[in-house]
Length: 109
Image (cartoon, rainbow, N blue to C red; front, side, top):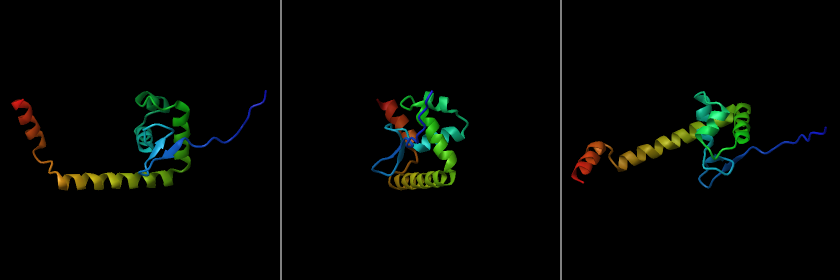
C-alpha cells in the first residue's frame, strides 16, 4: 500500500478588506478560533457553520495551534478595528433611546 504524503495549503484566504476567511466561504478565521477557544470541537464548528468542511476546520485549527502568537496578534488587531468602527458609528448615530424609538414606531404601525 502506497500512501502519498504531501503538504496541503492551509485553506485560508484574505479578502479585499484584509479579513481572513476559511476556504471559499464567508466564515472568518476569527469565528472559527473564537468557537474553538470557547470549547467547540471541530465537528461542532462545522455543525454551526455548514459551509465549512471538517478537514478545513482541522487544518485551520492546526495552523492556529502552530502559529498561536501570529494568529492572536491578528485577532487583537481585528478586535481593535471592530471597536473603532463601533465607536465611530456610535459617535455619528447616538444609540441612546433607540429601543424606545423603535418600540414607539412599532406601536404606531
